[in-house]
Image 1 (cartoon, rainbow, N blue to C red):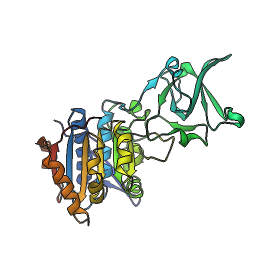
Image 2: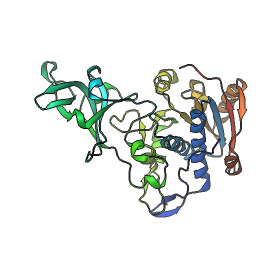
Image 3: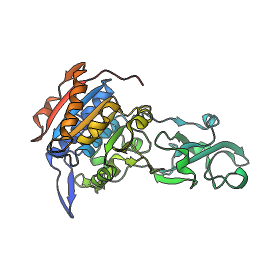
Length: 343
């Protein structure tokens, strides 16, 4: 098996206005996340446990590596693109994105909102997108899009109709951000124009999002934040394109597990010992990456949760030789194949 994607190889990090080469340990975590996504692609159900001196940035880099791997083939696990004829079957109130079709001169913008219906009027076939209902239940603000120039993508969890009741649409760029081509692999325009839940990251949301603001750049390319690069979003930010979602470790795993698993993310990253202890049994994805910082008060409890899971393993897994040789100082890794959970 390969060693993950090439995410961040040769990249630079902006620190207090100065650029410096990204540390090798950071590149290793991104590569390890790519390897975890490869395990999922190969049909494995597994746990990758990482013991670290400190959890700082590790989870964000693991998530980045996993979504980078999905960009190799631009797979869209949780999405459906619909033509105009199929749009008639969508019930009113469905959350959708109106995405420009691959036509010459088509813009690189997408519009998200509540799908009211597909209708015909004297202008021809169009999509009708509506927000808050007006008096008497009549449509409120309405936007029209020519059906022959756009496609509809239904928005899966975490987007809910209630998130869109105050506005008729959210407008967003769908093209690859500047600088991404030097950091990620694969057909980036195809990768960035879709929403899909490829990786879920569980931890302290404010901490994860703050770490994701770190700016990186490939040589000769403009810098961009890790959040923009990997399209990481929180669950309460409607209209935001995403490939990965961050969940609060304080959420109830019982309430979150089924909505997440139904979207079939490739990898779930559990950020920190306390999160591992509480979320290990949730099995949000086929491959779970558990980051345990040894100095945490919850480290022993997290280790117990991992040992309990490993006791039920089908077999141990060996990391690729390149990852083993480059293992950062102070980091310990152990992986095993688990019994696949029925979805």
